[in-house]
Length: 126
Length: 312
Image (cartoon, rainbow over all chains, first blue to last red; front, top):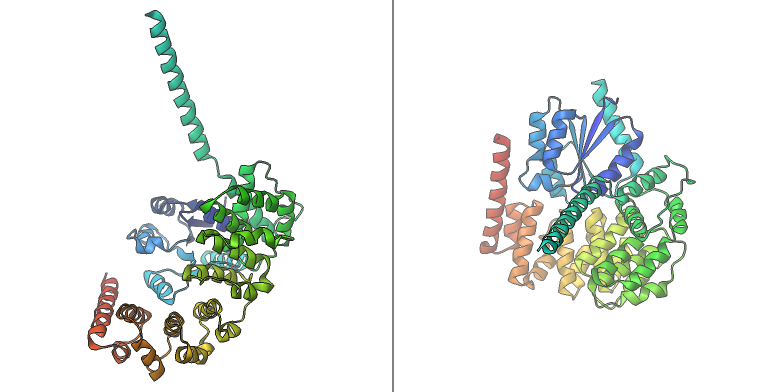
């Protein structure tokens, strides 16, 4: 059983499946969630190293997904956001909200995989 | 009487049985993974070279072929830099191009536009431009732009000529869709010839490229456009582009062109500059006292929001 865990949140199952398929080669358990409630419950249950959010909606619709995840988790999972937005204002706002890494679509598959792998090995060495 | 009662009981029982079967079937369908997701996994594995090309993806029914086309669209439109050559075999084996062209012919409206969009991400060996051209002249805006995107993706070397030949003005939404092609690396267009072109669509596309990729060395050209361009829409776009680069806007040429703007346009620009982070002093230099009062309110409200966040 993999001790390393990644949670992917997206309202579109196809996008979450794509990211999960890209990260398929790395040794980690990947769980896809489609609602903020499911994501929070999964984070509480699985205690993931990385949470990948494929939308910026949870940051502007009042869900406060990030603060809830930070509050309930006993460790501090790294939050990655991947979205289409390029505006500097949006990126700055996300970083102010506590997002660790922001990437824009379209993504380079091997680069994303290497980044996540490096992050997982960093978390394990700490 | 007995016959009526028996018929009534039979009908009620069959309806109940039918409802139970329908519910069970719906539950099973909901639990099952959509076919598109299965294809996405296979395609992502092929593109990330985790699986050999010999892995054949088969879609035998029409439903599965649509799902396969949607899966290719999802993977190709969200990623870049992968060699899509192996996908050509998948498209050929399943006759996806011919299947989609037939479907496009038979459908109408939004469905046709959706199928054209799916086709624009397929790696095709050859495509008949005549077959697509008939959709480029459609009165439906969505079909027209989807056909244009398909044309650009199928023949990227002719992109500038294709856009130049358009008889209609591209909307910001249309330009955003062309920009998505650029971001995926499908189109290789330099911004400079676009900015010097007299064609409206090409100029707008050039400005969008400068804005999206933050090309600061284009500042001189932007000033030239603002000073010499006669079409107000392009002047506005050039000022917005300059603002998105965070460059100073106090030049006399810019102020003169801003005077030609309508009050609504000036209000919108004032808001944009405040959001882009221009100081109140810079905004006051460009707008009247009444107009800059609006910027002051916006900036103050943003500062309050930040203070609230930090104290929490």
